Image (cartoon, rainbow, N blue to C red):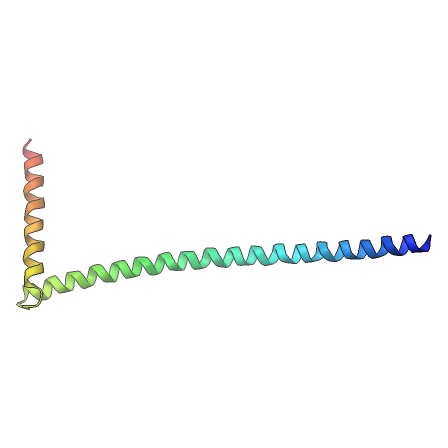
Length: 96
C-alpha cells in the first residue's frame, strides 16, 4: 500500500507544481499584455507626432517657397492652384 501512497503523493506534488507554473505563466502573460498595450499606445503617439512634424515640414517648405526660395516654387504653385480649385468648387456648391 505504501507504494500506491507514494505514487499518489508524487502525483499530487507534480500537479501542484504544474498548477503553480500555470499561475506564474498567467501572471507573466498579464504583464506582457499590459506592456504590449502600453507600447501600442506609444507607437500611436509617435505616429501622430511624425504626421504632425511632416505637416509642419510641408508648411515650412511652402512658406520658404513663398519667400522666394526657388527650390519649392513649382510645388507652391501647384498647392496654390489646388487651393483655388477647392475654393471654386465650394463656391459652386454654395451657389447651387
